[in-house]
Length: 287
Image (cartoon, rainbow, N blue to C red; front, top):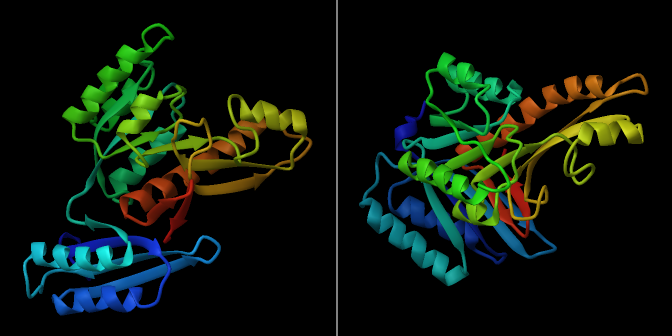
């Protein structure tokens, strides 16, 4: 079994062309990297190529800087965007919540069991209700009340907390506040939201009430990266559950919460494992 502290993931995207896979494999082999797994996808309509390569670095023949320079040379030649991600450096995750606890409990339990490999230095909320949950898991809990009048100043306080804790990823685990564009711009493609409907259906508030009025036979949940356009960011994962005419709004909410938990946890795990590439307000997920 590979030691995760020695494994690295390379994510690339570029215009589709011949020789990409061979060029990257040759660079890694030439520097002594051992490729553990590789996955690729081509969007034929957009003419864009994507690849995720996970490799081991314990037997590199050169130093890390030389390897990065060689990848950079290939990238420049092929018009490639690329990123190296170290498995041995766990990402630091901030959980944002309001009063609803099911997604928070699910993420914390998965983290405790080792399913989500990350550090959680803080839980932040606009209400004090879930502080006992944070205390139960030994995670600092910060209350930052937000109103229309103080939103800008309170978001600055939140950003200071995130910077102090070197947060890499923000997870909105049913955080019932709309983030401003300034906040979102500080964490591009690094804020994951769970919306309790199968987007683009029933965006905005009270989606279960909207679904009940339409008499839908399926309800769902959508995990997506937050952007300045409400509920329209790149979708990471979705799922649905069947409903019937007998289901009340309370029934839809109860059923939906099960879907929300699983969809959000998958999206977070895929992000932590560097399996997601974003382009054209869409995602490629090497799951």
